[in-house]
Length: 479
Image (tube, rainbow, N blue to C red):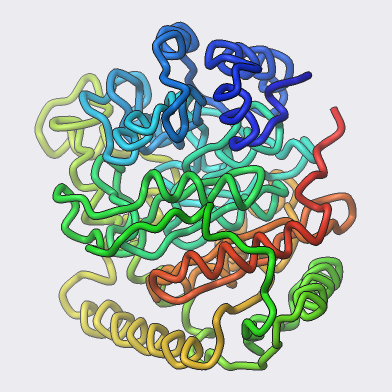
């Protein structure tokens, strides 16, 4: 049996029952990485010796007893590098502490193993903006794995990880999950602590799991969720056992179909797969309700005003003095800043810093930033109004399947539109998930299910019911 192909729950149960050990699990991932990651390049760093040492001490009775978990390279893990996919930090920074989500993983018995590739500072939708390496989609090595959590999704699709943690600022968990045929869960803003996560846009960022099944995501969310005194934005709300709350029955649940999410520009193959998935939910007993989210159209523009503004402020710390790459042969402080930041940041990060600084500048702050905040409030109210009528919203996770590597790199505006169906959920602070629902031209398609604030249980319930009634999540790339 190839242990690396097991789900998180399956390997956890095998370890508990004595059919495998934590050492076996780590060694299975090492063997899988040696066979497949040279082509996919999902990892930017690995330390199997430390992982094996931790595996020998693992307690199989804990919720994640001895299971290795891959970590997106913006989450701090003590004594491991944290490059954020950027030359600014690569080779210069090792984390002196664990992020809260890592501490919780360790307390549950998991072993953080491997740093997964990402768009630089989480800015991108294809992982092509990584300053470290190019990650490829395991389903087709000429295609993008999505982004910014492309590495975290790719290692799940390639069976070189049992589960991974990613981050979602505008769709960066759900879109790569859709592209790679995996399950990607974005929790409610504040449901999971961001302490120890390198910030892109602090009012939008959220950590969540990318896994092989909905049950795996439910298990991981129960472990990492909860109030954290180190993060004042976390919510003081009970954390249920999400996996135990999964039920196969969605009879009577109301599924909203927003007309703004079923638009021209969505590929025919994606639309066909998502329509079939919605019909399956109806067959399972769900009630379909047409709804409207009238402020969807400006969501992309609002996002790229607010996210870049926050990025401009958050990335000011990377100046070559306190953090990051330091230029050589400099003559004064101004030249030091210019050279260090010019050499350390890639083109997309520079673009967003410039945009963010512009919208915050004197004379433009009210025209852009303040107005964007006002529209964000309207977007949030749209969701509140719709969730008074329905339990979840269903839509495509992405308007297309994974695009060719290099296809959109010279067209940043088109690349931004890849997240057109995911961005509004971050602006509204609600939860969402992408689950595999079919294929188009040989590439996976994702069904997105959105829920209200702290509505993860119902979103997981509907996603699990759909997953159990279909076989899409069992499909794996042919190597």
